[in-house]
Image (cartoon, helix red, strand yellow):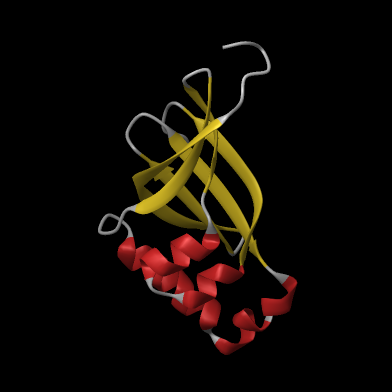
Length: 118
């Protein structure tokens, strides 16, 4: 594999934790080796989630699923080593059973090899 080797992608089921930071959703997915922290905002078209209670229901669904449901995480692998990840909001919404999670928009992330505060 050379310097410009092509990235490979692998879907992995991971456990997750849900938290809120400044009132916004955060997810840490882990397989025990890698820790994928994803910080979300709500898409502009779905700001009404704040007023009509849909955000609170989505947050509650995520909190209740923590430790019970595993979510799909797409790992990007270069030279045999995971270097990045993606948690697709549509796949997350499907796994959790709350369509409003599709309105989450990634605004920050971190990929670690040990647990971190998120």
